[in-house]
Length: 177
Image (tube, rainbow, N blue to C red; front, top):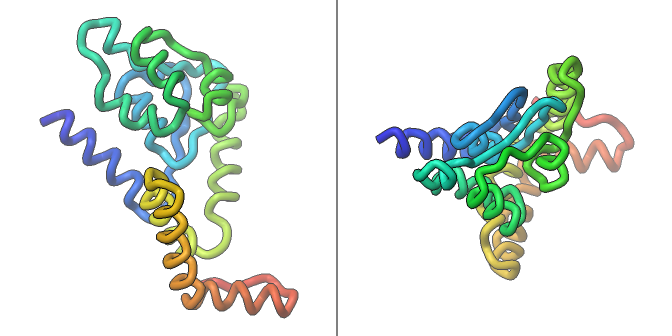
C-alpha cells in the first residue's frame, strides 16, 4: 500500500502542469532520492548526498530505481542500486540527477532563481511542454517526433502561442494572461 501511494505521488509530480523543483540538503536516500529524480528540476546544497541503498540492506530499491534510471545513465543507476553508496552533490550534478549544486547558504536563493526562470512566460505553454516531454521521452525517436510534431502544430494555435509570435514580429514583450 505504501509503495502504491509513493508511486501515485511520483506520478502526480510529473502530471501536474507546474514545474516541480526538489530543494535538497542533507541525505536524499531511497524514496527521497526517488523524489529528487522524479522532480522536473533539482538544486542541491554542497553537503547533500544521494543513495538508493536497499540492495545493500536486503530490500532492493526497485521503485526508487524506476525514477533514478530515467534521470541518470543506466550504468550509474545500477551502480547506485547495487552498491548503495552515497554519491555527493557534485557527482549527482555530473550524472544529471540535479541541475545545480550551491553552497548551503545559497540554496534558497538558487532554488528561487531557477523557479523564476523556469516559470517566466506562458503558463499554458509550460504546461503543454511538460505534458509533451513526459509523453515522448520514453518513445523511440520516430514516434517521439511524430508526437511532438502533432503537439507543436496544435499548440501553435493557442492564444499564448499566437501572442508570442505576434510579440516577436512586433518586437515587443509578450503579454500572457
